Image (cartoon, rainbow, N blue to C red; front, side, top):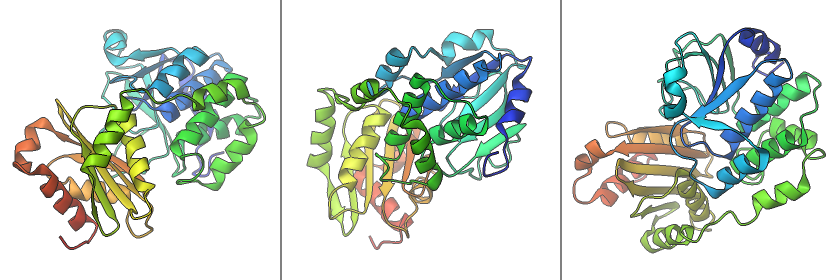
Amino acid sequence: MGRNGADIKDLIKLCEGHKIYIQTHNIPDPDAIASAFGLQELLKRFGIQSTICYDGDIDKLSSSKMLEMFGIEMFADDDIVSEMNPEDYIICVDSQKNAGNITDLPGDEVAAIDHHPTTAKNADVEYQYKDVRLLGACSTIIADYYRDLNITPSTDVATALLYGIKIDTLQFSRGVSSEDIIAFGMLNPIVDVVKMGKLEMNNLEFNDLKAYGAAIENIKVFDYFGFTHIPFSCPDAMIAIVADFILSLIEIEVAVIYCDRPDGLKLSVRSERDDINAGEVMAKALEGIGNGGGHATMAGGRIPATNLPMLGDHKDDILIERFMKAMGMKF
């Protein structure tokens, strides 16, 4: 049974006799993909078939490699929404309904499995099954289900789950809990080391270098706070990777980065300070102009194009001021 009292047996019983969709957050990353895949394979052990769906793009080389390597079938929302009925069951994985990063589909969101905190925006959503634990990765929760049921995951599932944990915890250096370590101990002896090696190598594309270059060129540092932007569109995963890169600088303990997109701005925050919660800072800084949130150490956010006029002609200065005030720094 999960630490919060959720029991995977209850979810299995809930799914019996229903058409099941496993929905990840939009633009799924390796942890979301691994979690959905692991859950799908687990449900199969009990004769329950399911369809994995998502909105947005599979926009990072590492994510695309996972789908190909493990034969994972994921369907874009546009491809399945016409066949979905209101009585179909949806399990939200690595997200929660109304979290701002998951599209509302016609089905009934009966369950949520997530490692992000429930916020005021989605605290009133009621599920028939809810397992939300503040862990390093959602994949850890899925691994825990296998352990609770005394089921050994397949080599592919174990490899995918461990890779998801490694990515979301930055190789076990960020937001790691004891449960993440236990999951590592369970999964590591089962993984396909050749496939894991292929996943962990050559995950940068040539165009990614431009994002690094732009972030380095535009960085501004204020005490422990580093702020930069990428003046062109790039994938969510790339923005997060560059944010981690900026945070790796000795002088920086909080990193904020955004990139310009046709539909607005995409932002990412990283914090290694105990007194600065990245999710809270993101939400406070974007209040009235956008939305966002996340963990204590990492968060994401968006400002829609319709709200960009509110930033005026000097959006960097306005955003810097907003984030510094959200952190209690003098501007």
